[in-house]
Amino acid sequence: MSAEIRQQFLNLPRALRETVEKGRPEYEQLVRRTRWGEVPIHLVGSGPSFAVGLAGAYAFESLLGWPVVARTPEEFQAYSQSGLRPRSILFVISWKGSAELVELVRAAKARGATVLALTSNAQSPLAKAVDGVFLARGGEEPREDCTAGVCQLAAVHCLAGVAAQVLKRPSPQIEALEGELRTLPEHIEWALTQLPDAVRSMAGELSGRRAVSVVAGGLYYPAALLGASALRNLGRMRAQVFTPDEMDARPTEALELGEVVLVLSGSRCALKKRLHGLVERLKRAGVRILAVTDHNEPEVTRCATLAVLLPNLSEYVGSIVALTFLDWAAYHLACQRSRKQTRSGGA
Image 1: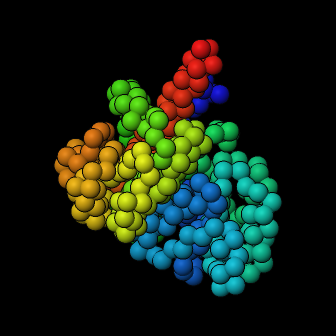
Image 2: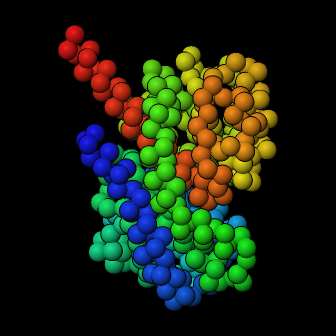
């Protein structure tokens, strides 16, 4: 399993390059073909795919200015499905799809909604049931949370950028995002080649900890949800995710003995100021803080015991690089714990 996951990381730049280069023309063609009717747009996903849907909601709203609602399948069926009308847009996000999602799609189409899917398998029952497929290139679904979330996150941000460029007037913000997305594979390659020592240090800080609280805002929050899933499934540690407001409302006395706070941020995150006051308070309370951010966040780095500095990127792309680092740290944490267990068993 260790070798398999390591190979997924090595293949990640190629998968992302296929998404942002080969996938973009396909995305544009389907965006132009779709009749964008009633709003809000409904995004549905479960588990890690819900986190991707939440990121998609932020991206579509900020770039297109359209209201978007992200729901789990159960929430959608309970609260939103009855509001579908002809020309409503339902966007389903799933790595492969399930029988329950296929039934949800059929019910939505019976109400006249247009249903689109972001998935990895163009031949799956889900892909065949919807009106259009946006393909997320990342290979088959991994048995552990690893690079699948990175590929989905890149795909949904690429799609939001394409939709904004096609459906709105060109703007410097959208053009800059398009340029950054094209360089995303190079940023991931840089991280994989330049940050191995930082990854080992982060895994070392997390090793032996009973729990970690991951704090993030804006587009870093969905990335934190995905990264925490990797820490739980690969690193076998308790990992919870909080927005800055949620963490601020949590008394420091509620932190478990041995718990550490991991901050995901970026200087171009729209919610960064809310995070600055929080890390100052946690620092004064003696909480051990780790950070994954960029060079322009001194308010965060000076409060952190360990700060990993990434390139200064928009939160659309910066959050994807931060997630890659966190997934990679979870993999190294799993490797460290496996070696310890082997030595303990040998003893």
